[in-house]
Length: 476
Image (cartoon, rainbow, N blue to C red; front, side, top):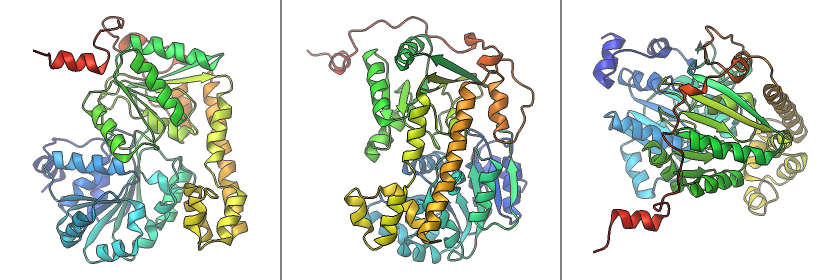
């Protein structure tokens, strides 16, 4: 059966998206693959279709619980029943049922933290894993914008699972990141597919302000004029909540999303957004990875992202339906200081490294008492398992210097006089082909292509929940 026939018979699609056929062919020929496909290009199909030809199960290592659950839900909507997610939120009784039937699942989603647990490894060892998928593989690289130390242990698991084929998927990766993915997963001669990252339907805008408060006035005007749905990225949890409160006061359907929320609350916000019940989500960079919403029209960065990679990844949430979408970056004098503090604060410091090195058996106490931050502890623990404390200090300092270089790239972006698209694409060692007419603010933007609201917002008596409820359920 030809791949196109398999695609149609399995999922009802008549043709592949760019890159999918090449990647799937390589997997079915038995090789390891690193695939760099822009957000919205259908990366998931690259392992979904081969699963119907390969023996045994496909194991997908996914970095976020919300991403994992979204992918499971998408597969079930497509008619897949033999799919399961294994994470810390699965209750014990349900987990035991999963272990008893593990070999019957075609798709097994798992978090990297769960994957390295000895009991879980033993259970996976009992079944045949034909393909291991490292989803959002940039998390493997120390140079990636979302470094996850537990991802580095995937290579340790491969021999335990009988050395299955590996598919590493990501939307944004420089050559340096790609090389590290290859090295950490110990892939000897993988097929590397790199799709042009430029998304022609996304236009780039930068708004510069003298004072931070001027951003608020601009945002109020913008959300009243233009239709969503849209995502507003803020640098901190507090700011995401403040912006949400502002939009709610204006009568807009909005919610905030960040890593400090309960897991179920985050899932609820994501589902509301996907169902069209929210017009705007105000979030830290915790929101977006793996979110499949085709018609997001606007991505607004209220504060500077900490890297070009992160910026491009977040902008890529927009316009998956191919229709015009706008990415707007807001900048005010002094924003660099917040960006720098966010980047530097997330890295372990020398004191934390020395404390962990001297108290390796007291990890729980160190984290509970706030002596060492939890994320910092996981990073430090990994490197200390590979090298000495002084070498770990040197390694973290090297990463810090790279982060500073990433900050410098963002500073250059906000002060750019030339084409924004060409600059962003150039950061990934690629060139712009066939620049679109509506390219970026520095080349001239036509805002008329973005849908405007039919009338300016007027405050309604149905703004509060009680009035809305009474309207839906009138008394008497």
